[in-house]
Amino acid sequence: MPAETGMPSTSATPDSRLPTPGVPVPGARGERTPHEAPSLSLWRAAARIFDLSLDQMLWSRRTVFMALVVGGPLLIAVLVRIIDLFATRGSVEIVGVQVGSAAIFGLMVWVFFLRFAVPVLAVFYGTSLMADEVEDKTLTYLFSRPIPRGAVLLGKYLAYLVCTVAVVLPSVVLVYLLIMSRPGGSLAGGFMDLVKDLVVIVLGLATYGAVFAWVGAQFKRPLLTGLAFVFAWEPAILLIPGYLRRFSVAYYLQGLVPQAMPSDDSTASLLTSLFREFPPVSTSLLWLA
Image (cartoon, rainbow, N blue to C red; front, top):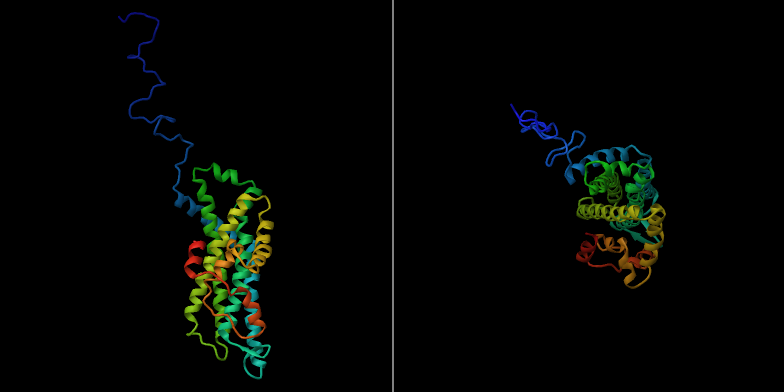
């Protein structure tokens, strides 16, 4: 008979607190608890955030605003074609100087897209990537999920980029077709410049979006800060000679615009002469990257 020592025999009655061989115990090292979900990798988590954010962006009120912004250059291109129909010489003139189709398209890309549509869309979308989550108090919920924190911003940023590119680039192509099909224009001759313009616009959307996504994560009023940067800071320092213009995105974007600006003594040349100083292409690509 076993000796009575006042202690239960471990050989006769196994301790229920000890793990049975071959049976996983919740909380043990290397084992997940029933409520613990597996952590996703950065890119898989970003892909899920991307799918959710893209659907929200496409069906939001900002999409209507974006359509209005990119619709402005289209209306101007249509107006130019109407002027061509009633012009006696079949061309557009500014202070008696004929303006070619390539010059008109180049100015529209720079003024209406790179200096207005691209930064404005980046401000309204980029600053809201994280700011909206903070205001809606959903950021804590996202960060409590088993996903890397960087995946939240990465997925929302990629959704912004796809959404804006899908709307802006078709508008640029339509403007190109309207302007370059004018008398004296050449659709085939300016095709490579169009491709370069599309690349520059995508690069501008990516750069401005990254800048304003950072602004949205760092400032309490990111929208006002972004608008001040686009409509106050950049226009002012581009007019000031010196190194200050290097602290703007527009300074490096204008170095990538392929079209040659008008050089005649006219109102157009007076306006564009303010932007003739620009960095080399290699410098622009290095800083924008």
